Amino acid sequence: MFRFLLAAALIGSLNLSTSAQNSSPDYRVYNAAGGSVTVREIISAIEKSDVVFLGENHDDATAHRLQAEIFQQVYESSAKNRKIVLSLEMFERDVQTILDEYLKDLITEKKFLDDSRPWNNYKTDYRPLVEYAKQNKLPVIAANAPRRYVNMVSRNGRGTLERLSTQAKSWLAPLSYPAASVEYSKKFNALMGSVKSETSAPSKILEAQTLWDATMAFSIAEHLKTNKNSLIVHLNGSFHTENRLGTVEHLQKYQPNAKTLVVTMRTEEDYTKFDAAKHSGLGDYVILTDAKVPRSFK
Image (tube, rainbow, N blue to C red; front, side, top):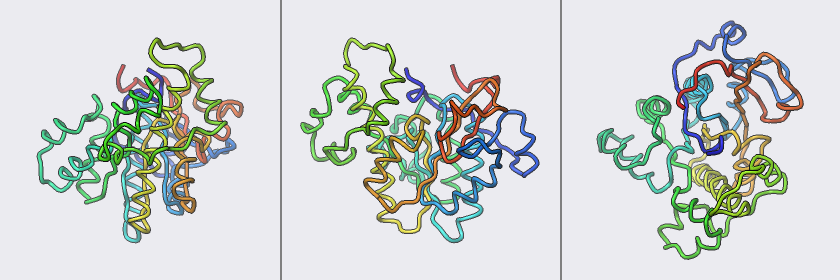
């Protein structure tokens, strides 16, 4: 599957003191133009935002350690004044009730996992963030479109969604969701390259990908509209938000006044060098991680 379809990364703890940020052996932090910055600077920028998108390669252990620590740091620095919210590509909107029941201790973790279709590596990679949210009574948004409907679009096109029930449509971005932008389409088609599918035309695959983007954006927008002064930390595959495209563009349609920040995390063999041709503008901040660190799954 494509890198934005892969599933999750190992989460651990990081010491994010200024000295640790500058001497970390497995990542470097840059601004959009390649200037060296610190994670602390990212936290300060997040505090001025409504939504921060933490884009990842799903098997990047270092990125997930950073995501977990960023979420904790945001909570510790901003929770007195704002409601901190975790939003996840990794759960789908039709399991929101199940997720909420678990966060409220109404059901056991086993029953939560039995019924919520977690990614295979949830326990090692995403559980720490959900448990931190649960411990601190923070909302968690199951942001993604159900996979069965994404697959339906990739096979038969977006028009087939109109045949769904009213309940099923409520788990998606409002129909008909906006098409991908020209810039995003070019980026997507370049990624697809020569990949061919016997069941899905490239345009249908793009429509399916756009359903993900739009639905995640709509999930975030819904929460912002009903929960004023929230600060949402959203985790997604980096392709969804790189260059402030995809999910970011859709959120701007649904919630034009939302202040957004994009942090893109990428693995590189030489992560100590910012290649302007490859990395400029990938996010408001770009974190390059050491590709030599073992992947969290294969």
